[in-house]
Amino acid sequence: MSNKLDDGNEFDVTIIGGGIHGVGIAQAAAAAGYSVLVIEKQGLASGTSCKSSKLIHGGLRYLESFEFSLVRESLNERELLLDLAPDLVHRKKFFIPIYPQTSRRAWWVGVGLLAYTILAGFGKYTRFRKVPRREWGELDGLNTENLQVVYQYWDAQTDDAALTRAVMQSATELGAELICPARFLSAEVAEGRVLVQYQQDGQNLSVSTKVLVNAAGPWADKVAAMIVPKMKPLAVDNVAGSHIELPGKVEEGCYYLEVEADKRAVFVMPKGDRTLVGTTERIYRDDPDKIDSTPEAIEYLLDVYRKHFPARDTQVLDSWAGLRVLPAAQGNAFKRSRETQLPTDSERDPRVLSVFGGKLTGYRATAEKVMSILCRSLPKREPIANTRKLKLKPEHSS
Image 1 (cartoon, one colour):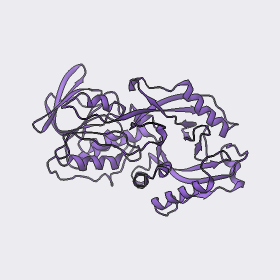
Image 2 (tube, one colour):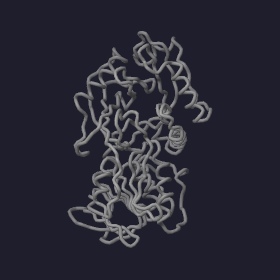
Image 3 (cartoon, rainbow, N blue to C red):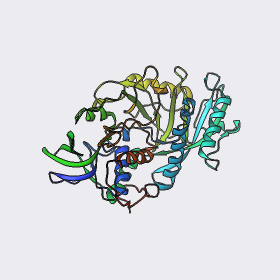
Image 4 (tube, helix red, strand yellow):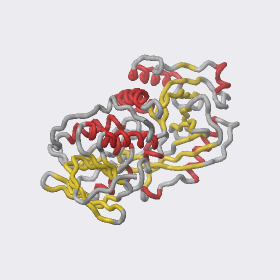
């Protein structure tokens, strides 16, 4: 899958983790003219980046917590990805049904969608509408009993693993190197450099790098614990999200549903010839390598699906779970901020930077922010490309 390097190689930027944020930073660093190495323990997008809800979206619900800058950034990145990766990112209709028991009343959802439109900029695919009652029967068997209003707006969907591989392919075309599978062992900051130890094919090897990026996702706190000097730990939680796959495909688009019991959002989406339903949210304290869906999570999602699509098949064909990293806090994980946190070992001369959290949609913007921080410790280089203009192609396509 990747190169095997000689012991003692030197790089400008070394990244631990081959998920969407790790490869996004690799692409941004290589585009800026730096020598780049990515160390991935298992396979590209083998963790959270293949277990997301596959959505490229602005984060409509983040408006309720007044995260306007995050929504605006995500909407901008959505449009950019639709242009840069037309074979990987596809625009989809999204539907929000409103029932008497729905906590967010129709007028309030309309206000949110208007704000979403304003932040996205008025255009053909940023507007929303009320679906006429005569069209309700076309909505994939959606329960119309006591249905009051259905709103339709636009967002997008992707294959998260394929997108991750495409970004890494772009990075390697710019000169970045990938070693995988390879296990990170330790790192030590000394005299303005970082010595990184890793294991590949049973052999212990090392590289020297000007800066180290910890983009290990749910494993980021474990990676941070193996770096000397120790950084101040960041208070974060791993949050498990389960998904199920059911027979048949919802044809009209994606559905944004509210769970009556806890007011959370669950999405029902097409995935190949199946329907994908997700996600749950629960704090996860165990080993990230052992994450899986639970019977309780599966039943939670099935209950939502049955209530909204009573005539559709509910045989569970597959189920899986992924982890996201959120700021530690009391209360419902659903209401926590989705802003990415980028702590460093030094504000003036950062040699180690960790990525905690982050959205699939915003990976490219996050990579820009990372490079703007790391440039304080990196030599000047002549950029060779701009990630805002680099087209992304499916892996191995010409």
